[in-house]
Image (tube, rainbow, N blue to C red; front, side, top):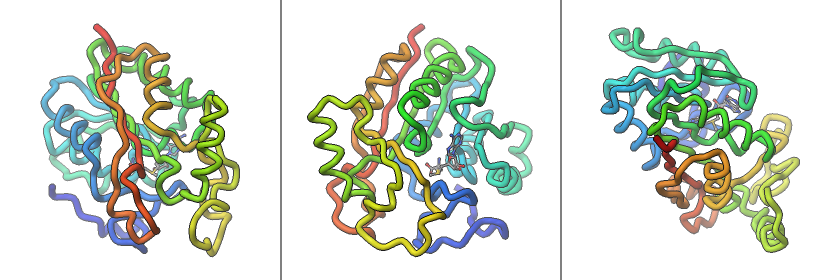
Length: 250
Ligand SMILES: C[S@@+](CC[C@H](N)C(=O)[O-])C[C@H]1O[C@@H](n2cnc3c(N)ncnc32)[C@H](O)[C@@H]1O
């Protein structure tokens, strides 16, 4: 990959490999997981347009463009999309469309995309909005199109929340990962709590699978994702993120 991370408007990486967003929605990860890699690989070879929702500065979008894809990249933060456009190699810019918008309200044309990646965005939404968003993704994909989802789980940096999550799960909660003021559950002190998200909905593979199936997808695989690059933030057990690949039936 030819991507560089020295754009003047991109914040400094306080922790190597994590580029902070400009709107307090965490960081863009520079180490791609297998779901993002598969999106890049598949989108470059599918011969159909790809979409990424919550692309930040576009590490996966640029990867897909470099692999031959045509990509519609969306984000709620216009400054991220501006940086993405400037970071995109000039010869690939004609294959990139950017669109500012926020899930679940954003809309894209129906039956248009062969692949769609939404990585580490759904956990910012309440359960109802996760469902509305994934139902829209189903509409936007062509029959046979592939959905790639990645989300944060309670087993990552918000690990002090695990007992609450597991108790809610045992009691049959539909969205056991919904937390107000999530910084309260971090295993370290946060200097400025107002800068981070005020709400999270941490999602495990089971919640991703249920949501995708209820929207009409056939789930190909859903699993935890190990993020050994989180090691500076305490004990890890290999369940730091969750991922899903699903297909819209033909
Ligand atoms: C944690 S970053 C993830 C960046 C990248 N996809 C990754 O996995 O590293 C979240 C990104 O999603 C965007 N975002 C958060 N909530 C969103 C929403 N409801 N609709 C659209 N974009 C959203 C943020 O602006 C940010 O760029």
